[in-house]
Length: 273
Image (cartoon, rainbow, N blue to C red; front, side):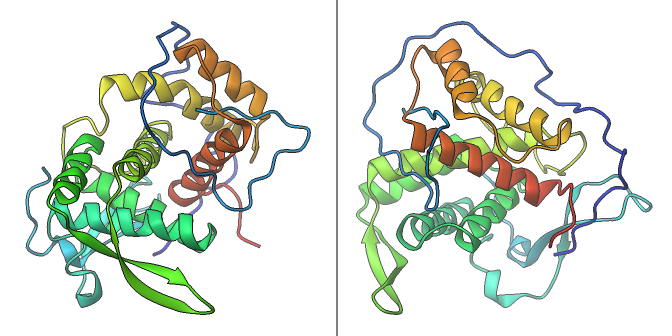
């Protein structure tokens, strides 16, 4: 993957699909069974934090996404055919994409963030580019759960061991929420950033309403002020304004890390050290 950074000053202000207006209408806080995993490495000190079908592509499994130079075309994610047999199954169908995402989600939970989180984000970006929706992938995972299908996941027992694991409904909800946040974060980047092979909205209106202000606050801090962190209290207030309740500090911090990490993948602003 080749990432190209625009010269300084190219992005003077964020131009988002969502706009700069944040929703502050209160919605009832819906109580539903869900597990809220904090990403490994997130700690809260003096900062306050908050709680809470794609068509089958015969050759799309051979696709890889990358950024092209702004001198040739607008900065955006593109898909290019490449003979990579290792990813054949992952992008052959929406079901395989859902399995790939869920496996990477479990890797983050079981083995920690860092590279595992970047792999999940990259898989989410590819799912966005290929026209997937959060609800479509949720239905795929729920269907597999109801049929009793087990997924190979990696566990560490002094090494890496592949074991089969059943799909849990709570984990499906949290995995798809992570994916929705990635999709909405992409919508918060200066347009056009990623080419999407579908006109279908990637997330539902309800999910967009709930999370667009949260993601837009972080995107504004990232693009306009060059920040890589926000006070969690600020994001708590946003959640309170939109849904009337806030998640636990460690959970909010992990959501924020997911957004910032996604921005670093799809629209890097600083050279890597």
